[in-house]
Length: 413
Image (tube, helix red, strand yellow):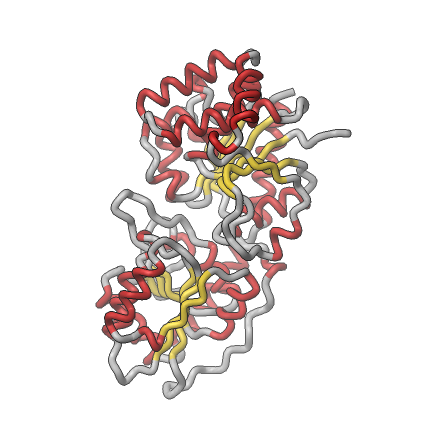
């Protein structure tokens, strides 16, 4: 029996909030790449997307906490100590630990030992999604096994990781990645500035597999007298800015008959619902919680405006280019967002959407502008739909990743 020669490390599988990863892995598999998925965590979402069902790769779960499977971890550590790369891997781990002595860091090395021990003998490379924890596990395991590794970086992993760690993960002298990809020009510029060889960092937009989405609905012009239906999709976390949006909704005049639907989970869900209730606007809001992609698309087709008030969190975390913006564009749903990070790479304000300041007064004014001008939204949505089809489809990025991953595997021969 032959085994896939590539191992893919992810934080958790499957995850509703990471459709961009599922989309990419399904496309790479359909392009002929064979791999196993190694997940650091077990799934917590009750639902899955239809996309997850299309993946044929085997999913292997590492011990989420080392105490969960002490016999497995002990056997792996004994085996790892006999590997030719153990000295270099342990020295790298100790150097990292001196600057980040945390349970999470220790867990990464233990997970890497399990992965290195259990990888098929013919595995020739490791590819990690996210440059923080998954790449740490991938890097340690790759050193242990003496094989190359690569990564795809996204948002939080770039902006909240310490600079020393990013630099070393990009440096071949410190067992850095053979290549890296990131999904925004904003992120690529930052990582290339930290890398000794900028050519090792590729800009690979996620894009959208438009075959998974229906053609946009025939949207009749909205009547001013109709309720103004707004929606958002995103986790309830600080960087999404939903507290500012709720404050903005509270500023809308009583003369505007508006509704807002939120889709997504997140640690701030209870706080945001309480915030809306304190303003007396909770009767105009529908909290859908986590939804699968068909449910999200159906909600987009019924809405008049998509709102994503992204901002930079206090710890530096921020969005990259959220796929939900492209999904909204696929259904010709007008977009209101903010000029954070890479969002302007897709939305040209005034042309394909509106990018507002994230202050509640500015957001409220922008929402009122869409409600008052029924022609504004369709004009912007048509332009965003055209831009999606011309510049943000999935295929070019998949071709580049397929090329890079195959080159990495050949390098290991």
